[in-house]
Amino acid sequence: MGKEKNSILLKGLGVSGGIVIAKAYLIERGKIEPAGYCHIDSRATENEIDRFTAALQESHDQISRIKTKLETDGHGKDHIAIIDSHLMIFQDQMLIDDTIKVIREEKINAEWALKKVLKTLTDIFDSMDDEYLKERSSDIEHSVNRILVNLMGSKHVNLADIEEPSVVVAHDLDPSDTAQMARSNVLAFLTDVGGRTSHTAIIARSLEIPAVVGLESVTHQVEPGDTVIIDGTTGTVIINPSDNVIAVYEKRKERFEEFGRTLFDYKDLPCETTDGEHVELLGNIEMVEELDSLLEHGAEGIGLYRSEFLYMNKSVLPTEEEHVEAYRKVAAKMSGKPVIIRTLDIGGDKPLKHLNMEEEANPAMGLRAIRLCFQWPDLFKTQLRGILRASAFGKVKVMFPMISGVQELRRSKAVFEEAKAELREEGIDFDEEMEVGIMIEIPSAAAIADLLAAESDFFSIGTNDLLQYTLAVDRVNEHVAYLYEPSHPAVLRIIRQVAEAANEAGISVGVCGEMAGEPIYALLFLGLGITHLSMGSSSILRVKKLIRSVSAADARDICDELFKLKTAPEIESYLTLRMKDLYDEEF
Ligand code: PEP
Ligand code: MG
Image (cartoon, rainbow, N blue to C red; front, top):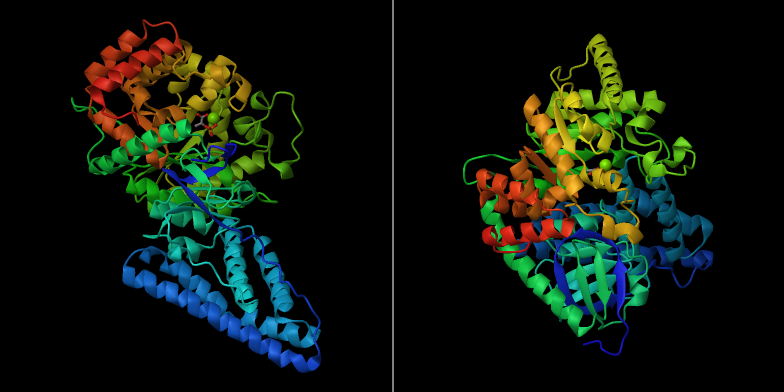
């Protein structure tokens, strides 16, 4: 298989998990440039208008047929609303009237006129601050592209008609294409463009079709019929893999699927050990769209809402109302389950351009997160007011990132109290009892965990940064990645110390870094008395299964043994061995 060709490894954004190995079905559907932009004689205008309305009708009919098929199949019913929004675009009076007007007044052909109107419409949407509405400009573009294809007489590829099981590779896919993938021969898809909030990614996740987007040039790297491996969890794509690599991924795929099937048995079971100790399993999110999947996997709440997403890809800072609206949606959807909103964690390797931040020699240790919020008090206060106001709609908690000492905690709480006082004065409702927690991700905070615990309602250990600062290993530098060892004894000792301090103070202590989603470390966390774990949706049932298979007493014994070991590899081997006794799979 693919022996003569060189293997190509690509990394994209894994937006829908799962492993697929199949032949590529290439749809070269980059931006559609009308072949003939031309001026027309005034006598030809009516003819152009007729061509335009016929193409419009044809597009409407095509999408209506897809809608009927989805309705009768009973599959993909959830996506009918999106199909309807495309149908509405074909009936949009502004699109129709403006195109006809441009044909008449500027005496240009239908393709050109339509392109001009499309540009005006997408400019309007792109200038909006709302990320969701911005994404909707791509719905208009997809619909107009369909009209253009019909105008030019080309045939729109119908994904439902693909005969061989394939990985679809496209520059971009529109949501109606994706909705057709249910029960089709499309096993997975790859696109050059795309982000997590595009409808295409949202549908892929809900249909559980593995997908990697944002690959930039995959349509130029793959040839039709090439063998492709895609891992939608990690965003890895291998074109023309060797037989050995295929064998490795085939095994992984088998295990992944088999294990996934059995996991849903655990969805409604409590997350508790065989001797009855409960561990709260929460989810990590960046945006509201991720909530459905978390709830489907039985998340008991949100343990980390990375609020910085609200600030990114924008030219202005979010207003207080935007904060309220975003958090209110999450709180309401979680209907009384806890939602921990982490205040802005930007800076370092995530600069915000419009804040005019200076370049720093050591950004990871520079002006980031809570430090930046103190530098920009209005920005901080606005967010805190938003979080407080959203607390009227659910069980919201606030969490401060990158706290390094007691002074910083007190300073954060003082601003929080100011925000509360203002709202009280203004007669605005909020939860007076809202819990205030901190992330423990800096070794200095861990060292004084007892002091911080006395003034916090909860801790959440951010292992991603905690490892970086404890081991002095840049978390984004691939050259030192071999030193980024979650089970380094120093890391384990620090986690133990933090857990003990929290347990003694009687406050809850969670883990929300990537370690929380790895079943192997759940053994450790259980043994150390961690009370909640927060992770991405696909990890929740895996971790729950492990926790339900062990007693807290055994986990404590395992921990005692672990702490006698001196190196990360020894600890990993010991944990792996003990896992095998408990857990029938690697995931
Ligand atoms: C962490 O540092 O572990 C964490 C959860 O926060 P982030 O990955 O957003 O820095
Ligand atoms: Mg962090």
